[in-house]
Length: 358
Image (cartoon, rainbow, N blue to C red):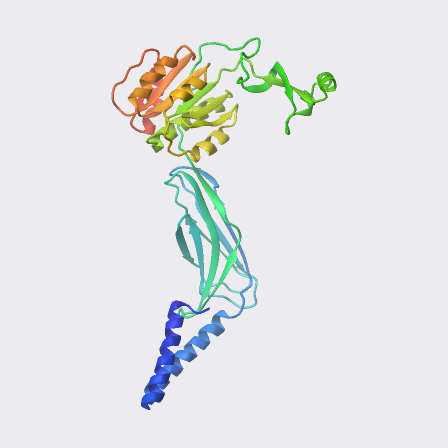
């Protein structure tokens, strides 16, 4: 296909031919003939269909915000002729990245890599990948699409933190509600089977009596839960990073974790920090405070991340429902709330020291 320069050259040739024949001058006709020959040579250059093996991979697919991620492009020439003038165009988010490929002799392979942006948390689509072959004059080009769109997930940054102590052992004889973390230790109740349940937990006598497949619900009774409540109003990356650090610290130590926002539950897991990071990678600004979220939870440790001093004071009202309450305050002002451990931070690097000091 003709490029904008090629279309302009073709239009100029037509005008020169018309002017040369109308005015009787040979010079415009000679110039137009030269343009037509250049277009013909360009079409011959790009007309053959190149036989290429193309593969692009994104590594890693999940990365903390600010750390390196690259796209690696592998191209092999399977044809009988050498190829030159190849250019790869890869869409990254809303921008387009262009890479000029070196000359490819027959049966030769080339590998090029280019960095991907990781400064913004969230999902970044990478692709589709287009391979463009153009003539040396840029008059014509041939475009082919290769592969599928990949997705780079930019997660929050985290720092290592100790697990907040709960101070009590809970539910030694079983949970007091259906919100207890599921597990494999203590029998809690019978419930109907759902797809994915372990068939070894089926209670056959109850199933025969009720005519419905029933399974035993087991819980890890003695593990206190860490509840992380993130204030998403005027959301900052520092707040998300602090929430991720607190939640991942508990999950990696094998404690149940639930993450809530003012707009509802975000994630709940027993030992899977990857799930927490994936969900927090996509969290956005909300409109509700964290008061309702704090009222929905109870037991274990409560970690509130907020930049609102009013929410810090409100956390003190929940101290009877939790063994320990920590408020990570995104700011530097001195705050105090009865029964609440306040951890003020101005950047993520200050969190481990402030957390340990409290």
